[in-house]
Length: 116
Image (cartoon, rainbow, N blue to C red; front, side, top):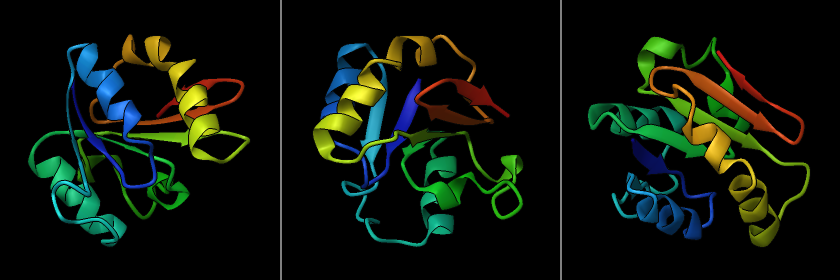
């Protein structure tokens, strides 16, 4: 799969995904760190990458309907901090990667993974 790593996620996640054979880029590497959500989503859609983020605003389907992006995975851990977030994502990564993520909003919480 092709992923776009939002600036709010640990870079180690990119390394994990590359080791698993996925293609990944980041908004920081593309020079759009700090850009508006719409700009980030458009950039990811243009290159057909699924955006990985902690940004709750991007999960708003009224503001960002499914047809406006290539897919979004919104991580919602109960704790913050780089190590905690990375541990949260790593513990769910294999299940997540088995799912159809393209063109969907996937919300990952402590208790479940919801796909819309």
